[in-house]
Every structure is written in structure tokens, then in C-alpha cells.
Amino acid sequence: MPKPSPAPVPQSRLERLARIGLAAGELAVGAATEGIRRLARGEAAELGTALLSGANAKRLATRLARLRGAAMKIGQLVSLQGEDVLPPEFAQALAMLRSQAAPMPPEQVRRVLGREFGKGWEKRFARFDWEPIAAASIGQVHRAVAANGRDLALKIQYPGVARSIASDVDNVAVLLRLFNLLPLGLDVGGMAAEAKRQLAQEADYEAEGRFLERYAKLVAGEPGLAVPRVHWDLTTPRIMAMDFMAGEPLETLASAPQAKRDAVGTLLERLLFRELFEFRVMQTDPNFANYLWQPGTGRVVLLDFGATMRFPKEFVAKYARITRAVIAGDRDAVAQGAIDIGYAAAGDSPERIDAVVDVVFLVCEPLRHRGRYDFPASDLPARVRDLGYDLAFRRGLVRAPPPETIFLHRKLVGAFLLLARIGARVDARGLVTEVLAGR
Image (tube, rainbow, N blue to C red):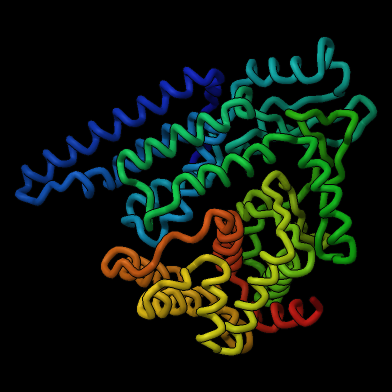
């Protein structure tokens, strides 16, 4: 996929609202056009299916990607939540929101640097590369060399993103609800509140720097992982300076020997379980761009800690109980665990609770499998999608998960896709059993 062209980030709330309104108009026009096209072919032209056309999804994704900030981030969350229940064309188009965003043009970057570092900021650097290394929903990364020779990666936040979080989330949620584009009867209010909380944290780069330093201590005993240092003299709430870490995209491991792929997959899966059950601190954005592979050292570099979450003890205890029940094959205990977490309610019908238990057992297939689970050969995502669509839409038996689980689910789904992408075979059951025993 070609890199998006640079585009200025809309900064004022009014300008961002106007862009979202324009997206709404495009969706309506696109649906009408699709309906007319279907009628001309002698097909039924229901509004709902016309709205969910692939062309409409591309229009929405393009608009959100150019807005960046919270608007793009909420679209990313919906794309993950909706993979199991949205039409494939729509889900595929929204998936573009999880790839690289359009970067700021150099003149806008220059203004941000001047505002954060002050007049004469150029003297702080011996070199500054204006071409960004990466661009995401909240900010973009540039390589630079400090005046004293330190090789740095500067994470620069898009202007206006922090102050527009609440309005962006609310406006996009209204748009998605207006056009009935949210899957599984999602708790829009709860999702919006959770998104605002998480995004406010992600937009505070000083808070991210503190998370990065804490995380580095947590994984200090793992030689296979590397975490960059924070350079506080060049870090502000809107710019974070870190070590520049050389490496290759993690996906390049797909061509490595199987033993190497399995070893890295095991490293990452064990880290996932330690984050949840041991650290109770998790980096919840498993975007492929947040990892690098260093063939020379054999280490995996962890890059982005904006989406780091702390989990309360009771939250973790509930997941430990349901995980043990899944491994034991105890449907009654899984049912109780699902009620405790909020996947089901105590007053639900036996049929609804059975449906929830079926979903839990299916998505936890790697934990129930004895020995190495072959992630790249697995068709589990397709089976989960088919079951979820049947239970949610045809039979009305499954409701949306509680909002506080959104970012955990993002990490779990992304971790599965990551191991599939690098072609890893991992004994997930053995790893989680070991971590739970240590807990």
C-alpha cells in the first residue's frame, strides 16, 4: 500500500466538526447512489445494506484518516470490534485506519516544534529529518540527532488533537449511530467514555514517557526484549524524545527459519500473559509498526507506550478465573466467569448464556490446544466471525462486551494476528498455565 501524501491536520473544533459533517453527507449520497444502482440491476435496495457498501466504507475511512486524532482512533476501534459482524468489504475498508496515516506537511511540523521548544529550537539539533519515519492517528515520528550527538526518534503530536478528543469522539459516535454502523448493539456511551479516557492518556507524552520507563523495569529480566530510553530534556507534553532504535519490520520474520519464528512468537505470547496476569500493565496497541526485529541481536524492540493500561486486581482475577475454567473445560465455571466480567448477565436465559460460553471456548481455542498452536494455519478468525454474526444478528443471543474490555480485546485480537503474520507456532496453553501458576 503506498504511503499517504502529506496533508495539514484540521485543528479547530469547528473545522473538525465540519469535516465529520461532510463525511455524513458523503455516506448519505453514497448510500442513495448504491441504492439506485441496485434498483437498476433489479435488486433489493434496503438502506442498511446500501450504507454498508464497500464504497461507503472507503469514503468514511478516508475522511477519518485525514482528520487523524481521536476521530481516526475511534474508527480503528470500530474496525476491530466490527470484523466479526460487519460485511467483509466494509470491515476491509475500515482496516485501512490501522495502517499509516497521512503525515503533516513540513511547515506544520515546524510550527509544532517552535511552539513546544521555543524560539531557536533548531540549535538543539545537529540534524533533523523532515521525512517522518512513521505517522499514526495521534502523531508522527521523525529521526533527529541532538546537538550533543544523541541519535533520537522524536514523536511529534498533531496540533489540536489533545483539545479535540472529547468532541471528536462524540461527533464520530453520533455519525456511526446515525447511520447504524456500530456492530453488536455496542454500548456507544460506554465505548465513547472509555475511548476518551484512553485517548487523553495517549495524548500526554510525558505520561507515556513515565509508562515507558516503568515498562522497561518490568521487562528488564527478559533479554529478548528492548525498550528505548526517554530523553527528558527534549520531551514535552506534545513531543517525546527517545533513543532511535534500529531494526526491521517484525513481518520480515515470516521468511526466517521456523524455529526463529516460533521463538519470537513464544516471547511475545508470554509477554502478553505476563502483562495481564503478572504486571497488570499492558501496552494495548499491537500495531505491527510498534515492534521492530533486530536480526543481529535477536531482540524484539517495543516502541510505543501511549496506549498503556493498568488493570485493577479484581479485573485481572476475573480473567484468571475464566482462563483456568477454559483450560479445564468447565462450562459452568466459564459461564460464571462470563457473568462476572459482563459478557453475560445473571438473569440471562440459559440459551443466551450457552451462546456466550460457546463464543468464549471458541476464541480461547489456542489456550485449549495441547502443544504448539499453528497460528498462520488457523482459520479461527473466520470461524469466530461466522459464529458471532449468527449469534448476534440471526439469533440475537450475544451482546457487545463491556466498554472496559475494549482495549484488552484489541490487544488479544492483534496478538493473534501478529503471530499469524510472522508464521509462529506457539504453545499458548503451556505459557498461560506457567504464568498463572507463578501468579
